[in-house]
Structures are given as C-alpha cells and as structure tokens.
Length: 211
Image 1 (cartoon, rainbow, N blue to C red):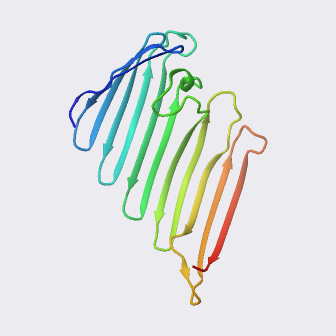
Image 2: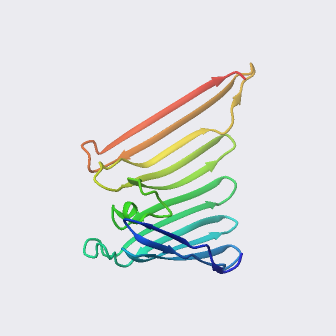
C-alpha cells in the first residue's frame, strides 16, 4: 500500500449537477489508514468525505464522516449537513465478542438528496445496534440493543432494549441416538410515541431430531 491519489469519480445528475470526487489515500501504518475524498457538486458545493480504518489483534473497525458545510441549493433550510458512521468489532478472547454499528445524519433528506457510501438513497431508516456475544461449550448467547432512526414522515418503530438470544452450542446426544436442541429469545420493546409504549416477547423452541 502506498499513499497517493485513487481513481476519481466523475458524473452528473439533476440533484447534484456536475460531480467530481477525488479520493486521496494515506498509508499511516500497517494496521490503520485514512482516505479523504473531496467531492465537488456544482449545485450543492464541496463536500469532504473521510474513512478511517484500524485493525489490531482484538479490535477492528472504521469511522466514516461526510460533511457539507453549506448546501448552496438550500442554504437556509439545512445549514451544514453530515453523516457519521461507526463500526467496531472486539474479540476479547475466544468466548466473548462485542460489536457496535451506529449511523447518524443531520436531516431526513440527506440520503435522498446527497447519496452516501454508507447507506442507500432509498433507505427510510438507519439501523443502530450494540451487542455482546458469548460462545460457550454448551450455550451460545447474544445480548443486543437495537434501534432505528426513521427518515421522513413514517411511523416510528419499536426499539429492542434489550434482545437476548440463547441456543445450544451443540446437540445433547441421548443413548437411543436422539439429539436434543433448544433455542430461545427474550425481547423488551419500547416506543414512547405509540399507544402501546412497551411490550415483552418470549420465544422458546426445543427440538428433538434423529440423524
């Protein structure tokens, strides 16, 4: 890997006008790097996009930032416009793992008007989650906090705070050859904007199979 200019992107559209993006890659170290991408849009202005990536023995992830100081087409409506995204995965040891995936935007129209490398123009919600997983010899479990940011005039969705999944890591073999397995999930849902503001769900699924 070498520091330098990457292949540029040139295009045009009715929303953005003439678009020119020239990424510049910085090879900072063996385990982390940075890409800065100035993006000129004749109808909107100049945007700066950045991606910072890192990798260690136990952690890996990326941080994305897209920032437009002033939208020339709508200077009084939005002001500065941005998108941020954090992705992180941590392997503490062979049994414990944690993860984070969080995206935020300055306004509901960001994706449809400016597009992004992180989300699609047609997305109506941004997924956010944080999780902790355990890989045991007999049981595997995943604890998650999940939520959504709704973009546009849509009904808000429930957030799972928390959601716990647990299942057998391997089947329990009986003397007659039958194998016993099980899976379960508990979730607590919350939404302060709806009539039913909270709910609980418990799902248990034991099974027996004969190979």
